[in-house]
Amino acid sequence: MKHLKRNLILIFIADTLLLIACLAFTVQKFIHHPQMSLELIILLIFDFIVLSTFCSLLTIAVQYIIRKIKARKKQKENQ
Image 1 (tube, rainbow, N blue to C red):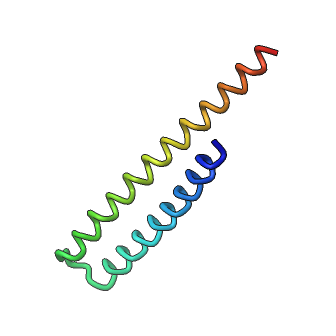
Image 2 (tube, rainbow, N blue to C red):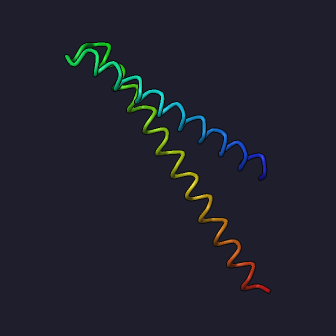
């Protein structure tokens, strides 16, 4: 279980950094070339994919935390 938690944290951090980098790159491209081009549309689609992955990982992390809290409450009740 420790490895799962550590891996989840590492993946979450990596995905967060990827999301920040993708959004920064897209904003930079849009500032220099404000017209919509195929390249910018592809970048926006890629940003959406990364953002949806980020949201999925965030959901998994929240579910994991909720399970841990419930397990601790149950443990306290049994004592």
